[in-house]
Length: 215
Image (cartoon, rainbow, N blue to C red; front, side, top):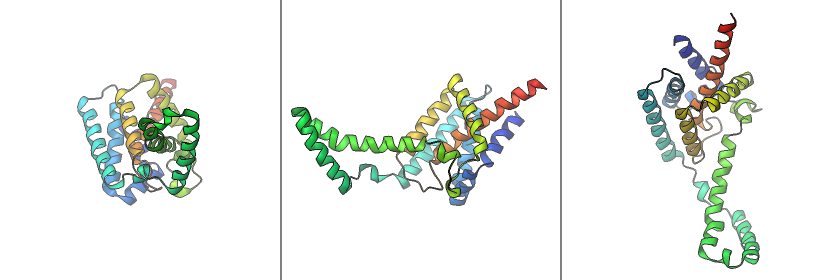
């Protein structure tokens, strides 16, 4: 157990991202590092329900804090350019769909609902861009050394195969909240920090176990 703890601790502190978090907010850095360790423990066979509860308590607290101070209001803001695009789209759909588009439900969907969903899905895709986590050309936005990418992939594959429910739920909730807030480039989608650490640590643990068997 001690070696497993050292693995997740080493991963959590052995990257560029954690120091950007600590430099911006020491308490946030401590909480996210602690969350990384707890999330890792939930993926082990000897996990306890108390640790799982602690993981989601911290996630809930951080999510509410980020939504309160950094909610992305741009999601619901329609720029002048977007208004022009909507107008042109409205003329097109109005001619093609007729009454289907012209009723209140159709107008609401195309002019109000669809743009918001499009922006949120765009944020989703941006947060899932692994290049900015491991292959960023900008040193200030680098998250992890590129040599950790194979460990991340190995750990992610293991999570997918085993289907560790706590980790999956954490990832989805963190991704949703991260897609609704606006954080500076250096901080990034910080709620995903523990999940990335988890995958890298699981990959490292898997290699270590195989190495132990070969000795």
